[in-house]
Length: 227
Image 1: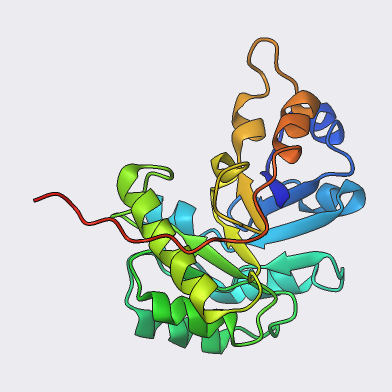
Image 2 (image 1 turned 45 degrees about the vertical axis):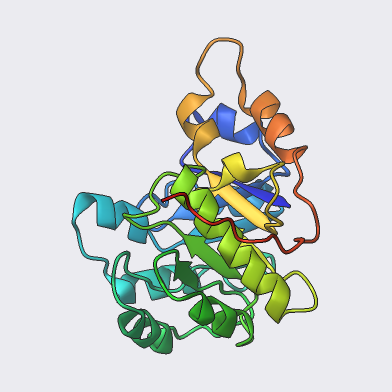
């Protein structure tokens, strides 16, 4: 599992403590994008849809395409193509068709309220990875409804594909070390909390980066809900 640490991280000295790590930079807060490419192993370019969704703002997709294009020459950089939280699958697919930078360094988003069959189609469609994003119904990662849905997701992925597909969990750092075999996760935990007592960016990153998930999912019997 690869851990992408969200930015911006301030002060700059705190960011440089994480030299050699992997970073997530959002189009809504691109402050550290050049520095992350200077010091990071891999950089994930987030389209900012979640932040825009929370604030009720629209995304300038053309500006995002142009911004991402500056950094995709770096072979370890990848981007999240456009998505809209709580929108129907047809709208998501239409946005993906507009993505101009190909599939080799891009991971489209499958939202947890969409049919799992669409997730399987995305996995099978040649993208470098597929991201899973929460929705209103599954907004709290590791809540009981979220865990039930995620078990169903991995059951179907394991049945459909011989090998574990590369799946990234958005805002999913707390999934580190748990039962779902994510290839990568991200969060802004270090950016938000490194200033707290007895914490530092480096010690926090050491703890997260050492937590790995299993490589394979074992299909689980679906539990019947009590009536």
